[in-house]
Image (cartoon, rainbow, N blue to C red; front, side, top):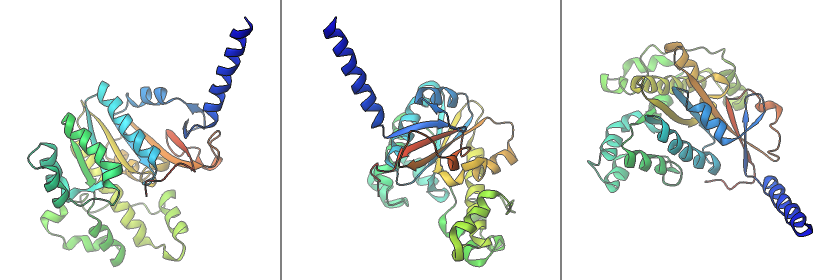
Length: 284
């Protein structure tokens, strides 16, 4: 009996130690701790899930792949990502279908610097399972045009092919959305109305391509920087303008020195908030 009691105490001690050293916790919008299993169960019921990542966060990228695998087991799944621009869709499709090999894909497509470590696993999974993968983001050069020119008017001179790579014109824009106002505040002297317009153009384009590919019998899992979908704004604002009937869910990622309680500033950020220990290694 004594040996059994000692063993039980030791096991409880190790269990507590393991909890103390967790790399992340998941919280609801209201700050309640929730298991990955419960988050997954809730997300399985949604039509479109926006996974807001921190681009250099290893836990974000790991959970993106794990969630993709788990949703695929239950739902007909399609993927999309901010990290691949819309004018790369044809090349992406050729790679996914096996018409070109990885060497050709690497040569023809434009990638973010951290593609190989952080996004290639998602593309390779889509290729293996023959999933649709949507290159949803606007080609960066057009967002830069809006930023540098001071407005959406510069888009009027685009060719028919170029227009096919962005959200339909004219772009609906609400400069009073709190997150857009926050951009100007965050950027200080570098903030400007045209910077916010460029951000909105990205959000509108990603929403456009999500809905252009969305099918009622599928679930769409989209990967984007968390600022593009935090607080039910950004991409989600545009999605709801066009299709308020769809069931949406959002995920966001934050870092804290102590992950055992979600900081007040992060409440309401998303339906589920992945809180990562700030000491976790970054991917770049």
